[in-house]
Image (cartoon, rainbow, N blue to C red; front, side, top):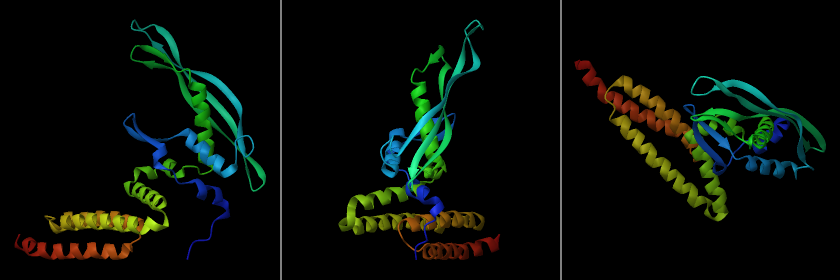
Length: 252
C-alpha cells in the first residue's frame, strides 16, 4: 500500500531527484563536490511552473562587489584586493493558482589571487545570478538529493541508473533490464559471501558481516529483492564461518 502524498511537500517530492547526466564532480580544497548544470535546473522549473516570466521568475534586489583580502606583489606591496560579487534575488513562482516568493544570494569571486598575481572573472555577475537561482530552487526541493549529499552514496547512484535504464527500456524491455540488474546483484553478493567464508578471525568476521549486511540491504531494495532474505543468507554464511573458526580459537 503506497504512502499518502504529503500536501506540504508536493513540490519537493516532484523535483527532488536529479539526473546524474547533468551533474559534474570536482575536487575542491580536498573535498569532492557535485555541481548541477544551471540550465538543467531552469528546465526543471519550467516543466513544473511554466515558462519563465509567466510561471516563475526573479527580481534582482542587490548587485554589488565586496572588497576582500589584499593581494600582494612579489615585493610585498599591495597591488589589489580580492573582490567578491554578491547578488540577491527575489524568486517568485506560481503554484496552485497563487504567486509565492522567496529570496536568496549568489556569490562569485570577481578578483582573486592566482599564481602570477591577480585574476579577474568578468563573468562573475552572470555566475552569481545562476548561483542565486539554483539556491532558490534548492529551497523548494529541486535536486535535493545532491544537496543532501545522497550523490556520495554509490548505492543511491546505482538506483538512479537502474531507474533510468528501466525508463529507457519501456514496458517491453523493463523485465530484461531488471533481470540483468538482479543477476549483477547476485554476483556481487556471492563475492561478499566468499570474502566472509575466508575471514581469518571472529572479530573481523563480525565487522565484515555488519558492513556487508548494511550494503546488501540497500542494494536489495534497489533491485526489488526482500532485504530480510538477503541478510538471512549473509548471517547464515557468517555463522558457518564462526563455527569453523571456534576450534582453532579453543586451541589457542
